[in-house]
Amino acid sequence: MSDEPVITSYAKAPNRTVTASGTTFAYRELGPRGGIPVVFFGHLAATLDNGDPRIIDPIAKTRHVIAFDNVGVGGSSGTVPPTIEQAAEAAYRFIRVLGYDEIDVFSFSMGGMIAQDLIVAHPGLVRRLVLTGTGPRGGKDMDKVLRTTYYDLLRAALTRSDPKEFLFFNRDTAGKRAGKAFIARLQERTTDRDAAIGLKAFQTQLRAIQRYGRSVPSDLSAFTMPTLIANGDNDRMVPSVLSIDLHRRIAGSELIIYPDSGHGGIFQYHTDFAPRAVEFLNR
Image (cartoon, rainbow, N blue to C red):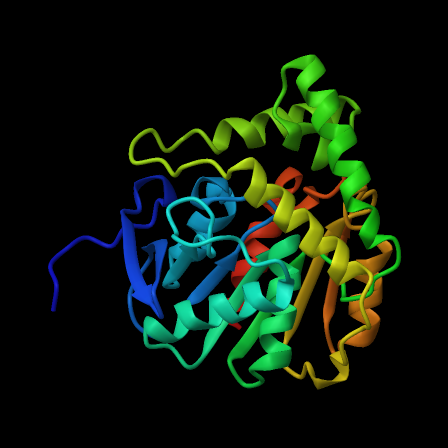
């Protein structure tokens, strides 16, 4: 038995690497070891430094949590895959090299798309599924993410703000306040921070989402695992109606829609959402 104290703060989780099929994956893990891990799948342009500690830390109090950089992002080697299916296969290689044949998944935005393709390709791998700020393959208007993203990047540049303040949050008083608080939380880790995503990698991810949005829908009737779906009611990146569509197509799924919030509704309402996610994952 190791006498090392259990790390339950994402800001203090050490950086680790593992190599699978020639790709070196960067990852962080925290929480008590043993049992089925909760693997976090991040959003467009996300690196390890984009996990919200107010959501990860409560889960890590009782569960082994793993966050990772997919191929070509942050500390992971290689180039970003041009499709969501290929990103899902890379994630599968990472999970298998760590020795897991069953996981729980917490996903946000593009991470939820990758998680869905992972389940389609590898049924039985995911025991419990959390899909937040995301939508199904072929989802209506999902391919407009390019236009929305570039527009908000410009708005952020003009105001010298973080683009996530525009992309994730409403521009009302509550949304602006929540956005600034969220960005501040992402700075709580002060050492061993991850490399930001490169422009070419970012553009490749955006095009992969566009392709996903324009392709033939997946058969979600095969998703039989307990599933929790959450979003804000005004998601401009992945329209909120797509969360409702996921809920309708995944039998027995639970749906939370937060009022007066956008793509980052779960971050704006983290004090309500984190305990619900913990309860769901530990049920």
